[in-house]
Length: 268
Length: 351
Image (cartoon, rainbow over all chains, first blue to last red; front, top):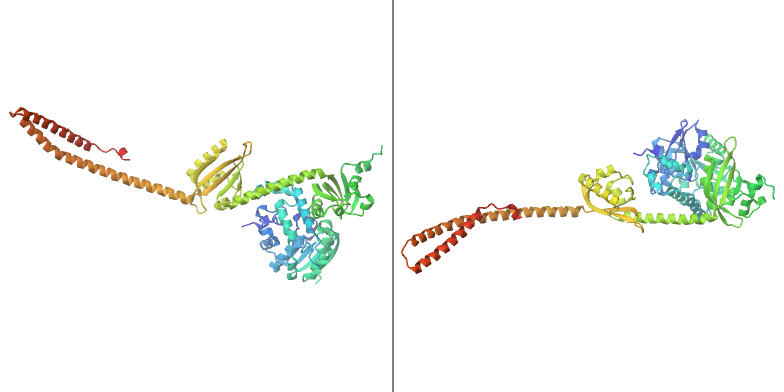
């Protein structure tokens, strides 16, 4: 049987009756939560993890079929919840993890009591009245950028890492220079992230949720927050002072206080 | 001669220099970078953000990879980026950056140097193209190899296996690239293991092709016959590049062949025993018959000797001598038959 906690590099800290799970976005790993997660340890059991393919997860567990849709990533979250017997938890997602969280909550609503979306986007491109913020050309340029920055990454290394789960230092060495280890996985995750359209799932969501919306985020224009609020039952929108796509890194205090305020006095 | 101070050196350095806040607002930029961007300090400093002077792909890359990394480890090195000039021209750059933090650990300032690599980039594009082509070729080979019904593998000149097709993985039910000597000891029929190992080591030492037939363990624990061919692949100069091996399942054919051989042996053994039996019978008949014939001949010889003692004319004596001669000839022929039918048959002659 697969050791889920090892596979997803799960860490559990803090203490409390309720569990709070932080799910990282595309391009990084659980370390991006370090400025935020510790603030919740005194009142909650805090669960951090890496999706398979990211950070220090077990790369040999990666397969293109499972992780070819956001559902595969949602299963990672559900696997962790089942393993740790998590119910009625708070799931905080960044970027693509927000829509992964929606999928997880649609599959197992009882696992979650509240979802928190940081810089979410259900669809990155524009479509009719919907303004996703990105053009296809930007994604092509991003792939080009990824390719040229992985020039030194030898594909010959892949079998060495894939075939040596007992030697994680092979993967570690690479992840120290880059958040994501394997460029093939990074590319596939990028494709899933950018080409998924999760808009249809929003109206189905039963678990209540909070959107933390930044300004000047090229990956999520401000009207996205409004769109999510309008199309998702029991969604509350907070516009942050923070800018950019990673407020949990650039403005951790604002993220902490916003989440705490929401959890203490739900706007409903 | 201009006054050479820190600002002068910074402005005229052979690389771009920029300082910006955590939100990207540019607070400092040297002259060379302004020149690349075809802008002035007034247009840029405190008016533009770092995101505004790089292309869309770089912006995404910065948001998703570079900024989180800068935040976590405090520096990044050699990131390939594209600046965009005020005339919308892309300038390929390498970016090194380090973070100056506030007392509470938040980012105060990011300092970055940018190296123009426009020429180098052309070379990189060539490398990237070649790399992609090589990857495509590899994929094509793997696709073909996986489509084949045979077990196919490749090995480095040293013998280390570096590719196994789907059939290989399925047949042995294993994870890729996890084959060791003990693995082969386990899946090869013990007798074949010894023979094949010798052949393979000899082929590797001499860098020559080899082929053999051997038995491999199936998932059910039984052994199936395979025909193995290993070919040495060489470059134009004849240098060994890799080994290409294939195993073809010949179990049904080989079993048939072995059965036919077995049947043939059996039939031959049956036939030889029949021949042996017939020869024996023939000898016994000859022996018995020659004895029967011999006694009247002896009688004739006795009668002839009685005739010899009688007074007879010249003509009769001549006839008696002829009769004696013929009878003795007949007797010696019969003796020969008796003698030969006495000798035990020699088995070697039968086969």
